[in-house]
Length: 183
Image (cartoon, rainbow, N blue to C red; front, side, top):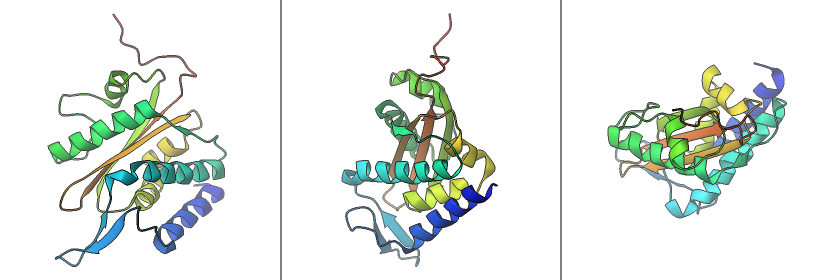
């Protein structure tokens, strides 16, 4: 891992552990098991998406990649998959209908090419989840892919506090619609 990416990751982890969070963006509560749960109010979805975008763009900048922009279609595809993973009760890249990240992006009208998808089944906040993704080579590559221009991020939280996260990246249509159906 290059030094700048490592330093950016270390900063993100430190900030996610130390920064006082506004009460309106996720609340921590003790669970009967002693575990601290991170509760998200769905009214804060946009704030959470922009916090992830800012964090990801900081990490990308440290890696020498251009910033991404939030994309409404990819947000919708990510939200569909986050809910579907909860229904299936397993974190994987295929929908209950057999759909792939490419299929889900096509269904919502994304004109670009899907480059990657990160998923997580966790009780952690959005910043803790991004930090965890940055610790794994395959998920880090999705975040810092220099070809990525668009980002979609969504979550689904169960009553027990478990959060299903989905992050999708795309090229913004710069390579043409290679995800278009053939035949």
